[in-house]
Image 1 (spheres, one colour):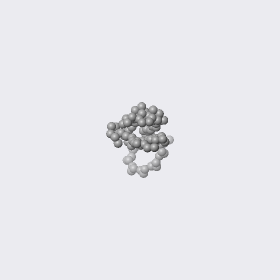
Image 2 (cartoon, helix red, strand yellow):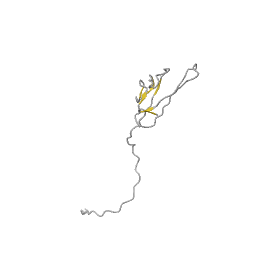
Image 3 (cartoon, rainbow, N blue to C red):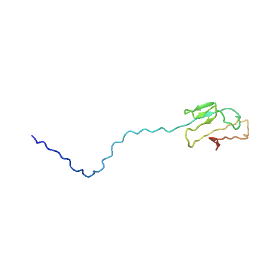
Image 4 (tube, one colour):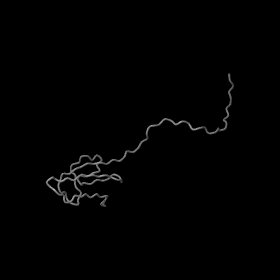
Length: 110
């Protein structure tokens, strides 16, 4: 039979070396990037001048940022956006007098 020893806490020793890196954990939560895209077309000749053109045929508009009845796109966040469009004239029309597009940022033409 061993005698019961009384323990006394000693002084704190020096700091040890850094341990090895642990295992890689699961990725943390992140917010998804805001996406915005649409594709629409119109087959109307000579739309009203200086007015937004309605685009009745929508190919895609998943986020709903484009209003086809008003022909207006509302950007969900500030940033740089890329727009492309195609103009076509019938073969019988040899010259197009003028074709232009206005892009507005809020109420300012850019």
